[in-house]
Amino acid sequence: MSDLKERDSSRDERENNGVSPVHGIDDLPDPDAHLSQEEREKLDRKLLWKLDLVLIPWLCLLYLLAFLDRTNIGNAKVAGLTDDLHITTGQYNAALSIFFVSYSIFEPLTNVLLKKLRPSIFIPTIMFFWGASMTGMGFCYNYSGLLAARWFLGLTEAGLFPGVNYYLSCWYKRSEFGVRAAIFFSAAALAGSFGGLLAAAIENLDGKGGLAGWRWIFIIEGLLTVVVAVVSYWMVHDFPDDARFLTPDDRARVIRRLKLDQQSSAEHEEWNIKYLYAGLKDWKMWLGMVIYMGCDMPLYAFSLFLPTIIMESGWSTNSVHTNLLSVPPYAAAALLTVTIGFVADRTRQRGLCNIIVSIIGIVGFALLIGSSNPAVKYAATFLGALGIYPCISNTITWMANNTEGVYKRGVVLGFVIGWGNLNGIVSSNIFFDSPRYLQGHGVILAYMIVFLLGGSLLMTTLLRIENKKRREGKRDYLAEGKSELELDRMGDGRPDFLYTT
Image 1: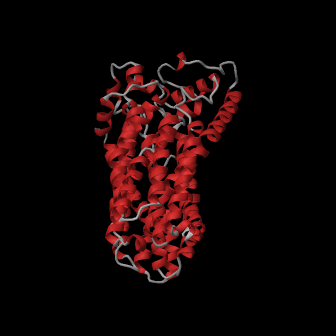
Image 2: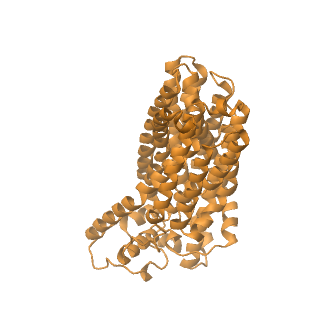
Image 3: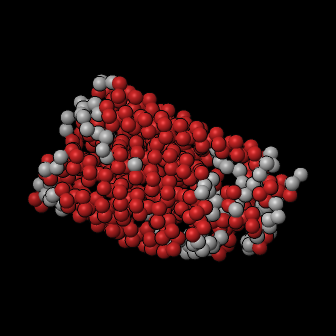
């Protein structure tokens, strides 16, 4: 038996029996050394609950506001934005597209900045500026002003979604991260529901202060973001080794549990260009980009155009009713997103979850293409939402689970999410011919079949093959002559690291 196997190569076994082969674990302080295993587990559950209460709710609120601010232009459109600004369909689509250009350009850089500047400074600061950009959209009086506001909105929002996913992956074990990422992302679906309700209410201010209802949508939601941004300087916390809400004992417990999960997230790393190269050379990053574009482009197309799709289907005749009808599909998507996160954490079958969920969405968009019945089309929007939203958080968690090293994970998530968001440009330019929008639904269908479903099938197959080789000892030669510290630095490349499939 090889030395590597003698180190207890199975990550599942390590988690079940509590034994850790991780280098340096014995050198870390253990405040619970005198406790029994049962007492340790009780304290661990209490610690996890504390982390959840302190970290998750506020981050969900931030992403709810972020997604609300980037997609409320769809609600504003049915409330008269295009008519008041005298812009064409092509110009409106260009205003949607420019957001994704600036968002995608700056997104890969943001995780490095997050690590350098600290989450408690970086996240509230970008939030303040995107709230200001959102408010400014309420005072746009021509096409060029709308373009400028959307550009700066994309630039300032770029750091939140990849940053928070990266941040949470540095707090939780792999088997815990998925459901929390799902809860965080479910805020996007709730933003769709909340956005529809809020837009319907704000439209009643039409004419107040001499401003149209769609302007009030931008102004009120933007000012709300600014207020929450200021409070966030006290509500967003730093990484485990610096977080002020942890006692010294709790900090030691968090770092130990991450080390037991073979995460270098528990260690200080200094930025080095080698982490960028490590990400670029990792085939999983490139395939992850393909999978993520397969769900992210449909996500934005759905979010930006759902009010328009509902109105044009004949199921609704006025903007307030349309915005209200957009609420239920998002609510259903939020529930399934959290459910899939829980199931995927328990089974570690993230690829299978992507495959099953994507088929639901494929059926939904096929119905949107094949039917002209308003009731069928509205039901299809439910299937579309159910097939898209869970795959976003599940794919990000999948990539985070299979990428080890603080900066490498940050680079990989930045590229995956950035590439996905760049495909938002496509989503902004595919809905033209109303009322059936065959081209738009057809492009979404192609993305989901080829990239999301096909990419997930390929990824889970390749990871299963690699895991089989590692279990059989066919990668043990990579560990020959290496110390435990050198093996730790190999990250997910070390032969006893088993991928989540």
